[in-house]
Image (tube, rainbow, N blue to C red; front, side, top):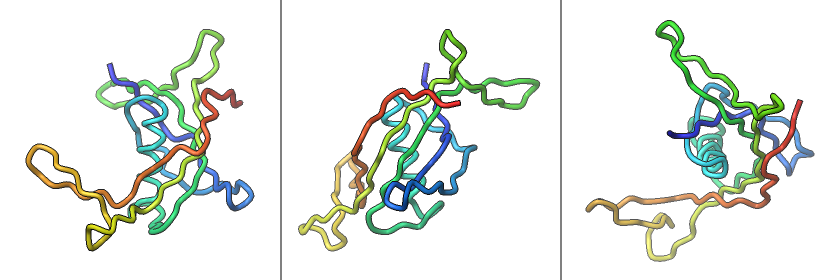
Length: 134
């Protein structure tokens, strides 16, 4: 069964940890670290922030369950035995690749006979792991 995560908060550490806008309806799957990295890609992409260079954000994701109630999907937070929601915090950085072999600087990967260009890569600067927030 896939684990699902939802963005709880996004701050900009380079700007005195100011809070920034985000879409809290978007869900990400995988382990908490991978879900935060997917969220980072979404946040810095053309759909959200339109950031072209370096993008550094602190992302907090919460584990959620998606259930169908009367034909409508509903999102419920996953809680531990004490009733605290499971949240994970990561400071992430998305940078543009600088590969001299390609004209646009992207890294190309062969997958199932197709060449897929990757322009950006996300790295975890700091992992705070599971956090308790009220």
